[in-house]
Amino acid sequence: MPTRTRFAPSPTGALHVGGVRTALFSWLLARRDGGAFVLRIEDTDRQRSRPEWTREIMGAMQWLGLDWDEGPFFQTERTQLYLQAIDRLLASGDAYYCTCPPEDLDARRKAAIEAGRSPAYDRHCRPGVGPGPTPGVAGAVRFAIPLDGAIVIEDAVKGRVEFANADVEDFVIARADGTPTYNLCVAVDDADMAITDVIRGDDHLANTPKQVHIYRALGAPLPRFAHLPQVLGMDRARLSKRHAATAVTSYRDLGYYPDALVNFLARLGWSHGDQEIFTREELIAAFGLDHVGKSAGVFNPEKLDWLNAHYLKQRTPAELAADLRPFLEERGTAIPGDDAWLAKMAATLRERSKTLLELAESARSFLSDELVFDDKAVAKFLVAENEPVLRDLASRLRALPEWTLGGIEAAFAGTMATTGRKLGAVAQPVRVALTGGTVSPGIYEVLDVLGRDRSLARLDAALARIAGGTTSPRPAGA
Ligand code: GLU
Image (tube, rainbow, N blue to C red):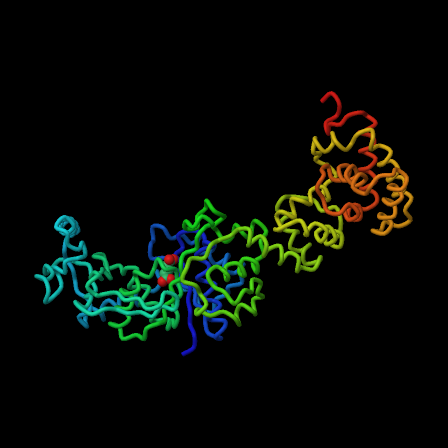
């Protein structure tokens, strides 16, 4: 049978970085086997489901490149299928009407707990077991779990898991108003969609015996199950907003590459030797449920940053410029140069950036001539004793026939020789003059990216500032 996997999010919130890993593993398995990946939107909770969350989830999957072959299917549009299944289960005796009023159920549940018995439904309405339903009263429908025996699943991650039928309640498959319940819909859909591998979070393990009973009663072949351990934060608590951004789309907005996030998520709980960096093709070829670990994946934000920096370095300067542009546009930043200039600037700054957002932020002094000065740096470096250094360098730079890295380097060498200063003692005041602060890429690159006119204007402004005797970025007296 061709592999068919699915991702079945409930549109009650943003796609979560923990949750999307199950989508990724399902997608990888389908792609590896040349099978199909199905998207199913589990929107039966009408109170909490919202179309905007469906759009957000699909947008996040598209951004990650987790394309689906079938769907999206919406459970709210498949009610007929569920009702037919319920009718079949009633007809075969695998389900029965339960007319117990909710308050009676509650009272009996409480009494059972007090008496130290199981609070599970007492099968009052089950034909042949209890007194049976009250005739003429609309009731819920319950599944009749066999009274003995067990469900055994060979979970691809958890291994063999056994659920004694005695521990599984005769659960409701249709409410008294006729609406089908969660486990019924999931099992009917997975059977109808011929899903071969159900990959999901292990918070759904407890639902599995109920779903298997439905499969069996409907005569549908069982899928393989793989229940993935939860994703934890560095402190080993379940991943939450306390640890990191949890919505997939926030990683897009923070300037992470989808390939970096996919690579990172793949390694959360799955391994292939000690390989850390995978192209998508490599992931597809290497992926298998046999190397998914039993222990929880730990979300290490530093590792994600490291991976993202790797992908950032892989881009050509032109690609990087195109990646960066939306981040600049979003901030309303004017770009004082053409595509080639932006590419050069981005390539110069990327060594120090982990994300596109960081890159955009670190580009401020290259994009705008309104420098923001660091007071301490100004007080330390834009001082009278550095005046001859800056003046000498400015005149050498002004005299350069061509503005090239080689020429810039030669100008610095000249100033070092004339002033007897080491490179650092020349570069720091220049850096403050050109960028407003003491941290930047290599000083020659900074000059190269800024170009002759902007560099000289900034050096002249710094000289004027020193001559004016003010070490503050604010005009004297302000
Ligand atoms: N809709 C469920 C959820 O979002 C997934 C159910 C499943 O994968 O079987 O948790």
